[in-house]
Length: 244
Image (cartoon, rainbow, N blue to C red; front, side):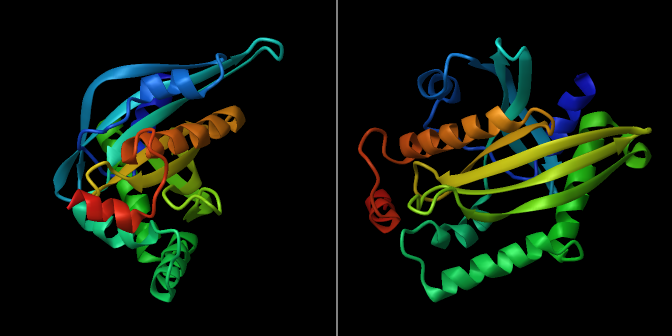
């Protein structure tokens, strides 16, 4: 389990680090059934990325199904995209997208789905470099990774303008040990109107089902609380105008 925890850190493809308006522990209690539990991992972690350091926060989400005698557990990662990446993605978070925004989404997903694209190669290099940070220099030669079954970058639901999601299977090979993992990330505007928050699930592929449903609900609740509290949704253009 310690090795899985370390590799969970290595799967963090997204950057971050501002204060968040929502409390994930409180949201888990309020949003999820009692069979779920969330345990915060104290402290802020930092990893090397792109010549700098990235802060992020982490916790563990678990569910116990007593009747089925099953237990599932995964990691929840909270972060923010850097300003440059946030600026590129913010135009997609509107209810009515224009032709330019739709073409941008198409181009992004083409890159995600193409194993030979620069985007996919950069993703793979990032995962491997973070594995080195998590496991030490032994990972430089002993760990390999395969990214497969990409879930394209898209709205979480058709009528939900403020939450986008993307996912993938991440399979680690370490000294003959195969670790099939699953990751799904959620993106939504931060409370300052300038950044994008990231909420990410990283869990063993087996038994991921109930955790995926749970993170869907948590992401929607976090986005609403981060943006507007109990005020309800508005067009993002109005929100950004109010933040100026």
